[in-house]
Amino acid sequence: MNKFMIENARLVDGRIVSIFVQNGVIQQVASSIKVDNETQVIHLDNESYVSAGWIDTHTHCFDKFELYADNCESIGYKKGVTTVIDAGTSGADNVDEFYDSVKNCKTHVYSLLNISKTGLYAQNELADMRHVDSDAFMQAYQKHPHFIIGVKARMSKSVVEESGDLPLFEALKIAEQTKLPLMVHIGTAPSKLETVLANIRSGDIVTHIFNPKTNGIIQDSHIKECVFDAYQRGVFFDLGHGTDSFSFDVLDKANQNDLKVHSISSDIYYRNRQNGPVYDLATTMSKLYRKGYDLKEVIACVTSHPAKMLNLSHLGRIEKGYCGEFTIFKIIHKNKELVDSTGKRIIVSEYIQPVAVIIRNEYIQLEEDC
Image 1 (cartoon, rainbow, N blue to C red):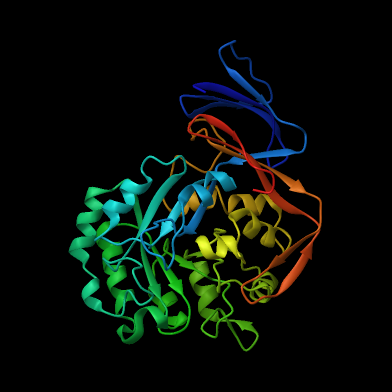
Image 2 (cartoon, one colour; image 1 turned 30 degrees about the vertical axis):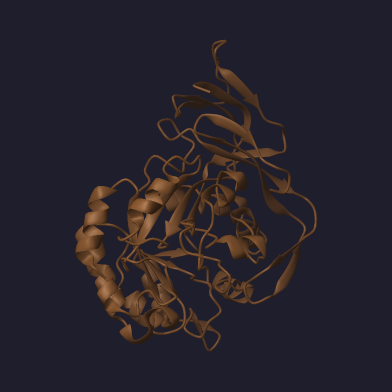
């Protein structure tokens, strides 16, 4: 579809518009648009919403390593997600192979490159500081400047072992050298949450922010003061659901304190996609939609917010000049059980379901209950 128009496009701000796209770029958004006979018209039903194509800020889609891996199409456009960000599965030693494996995929893929040059070959990729090579990182970035859009450091005990806080400080140096945002995974200390938040910069990202661990954002039933301090000075908070890193109870406490994530991400890979509790990005979005976030907030957390956080300036908005790729979705009014990483279950009466995507100038109807 070189030229197409979406009619009866219901946006989350309440507007119903037509959207005209040519050569992959939005040309016009208006209540009514006249087009020529060569323009393909997609008319949506009254139950469908349209947003900019969804962005999953934290995934694992380099399938070289069995530990955390998946196929980008299985977690991407087939699930309503047009852009996936791989969060540190590859490092400088294997990013060429990763890029070659995804460069021709339908789903758009970007990398937050692991500061360990080996990537996620094992759970403890930062236990040996010889694997942290800033020169190798810089060479990889210079070779793939449009693919590598950030830096990733996993700062938890099982990853760093005796390296302590050293990987964090090396990651910050690399982020400064490359002028890229840094995403830091938080978990069991070290590093302590207080140390991470005190040192990362405005514009950097903390992922797994609602994890239930003792090194998380809650202490003695209260949100730690360092969390509010970081939030107020511009540190971005990413959900990063994952197998072990999202708690409804922590979400509830954060909501009580008006502390909301900037981005909703899945931390998906094949095991938690197939067996839960993640399944897909839409399921993760539905958990926040039914627990304190309105639909407009949820969609911003998978469109405009991650685009801003990761400097993907062509994505995330339905406005003239932006990328003409879209996720079409519905709110399904039916009971569904949702589960967090602790095994806590809730029953919701509404959930978000993608039904189609427009990606690379192609309209693709998704499988029911994709």
